[in-house]
Length: 167
Image 1 (cartoon, rainbow, N blue to C red):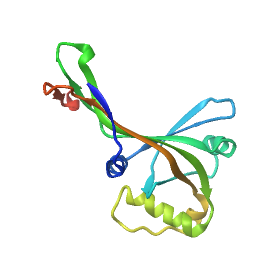
Image 2: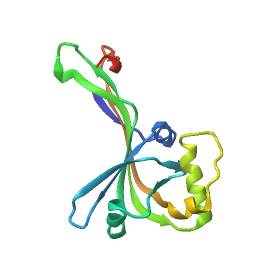
Image 3: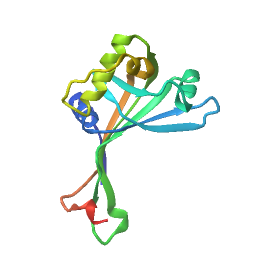
């Protein structure tokens, strides 16, 4: 099985758009990692996330705003030879990006960010109450480093797919 880099921006966008969660990694002042699954919105190289106003992640990000955010498409189990355990792999595509969290405080920008997040999950238009907007913490991350990969690609045309619902 092979892994290939993905360079085309439209493919990277397609991967991100196809995900329902991202995983946000950060490190506290002692270097202890902390990773959260989060809902997100994506628009023109910027990721928007939302959370409560305080908590462990906010405390960490106030001291170290650098994050690593990972996306992965739904993996499929593939193999080269059904009898050889080492030939089994997961086939999927992933995007890893780095950036710095900036907390958005402007009311109108927070509404735009919430709309971007909701577009990831629905085609509907939403209205937000003033208290809801004021009480949400919006994270804005300009992606300053991005890499994407397609992995588990068969090196020959002998791959078989296993229906994951059988597990």
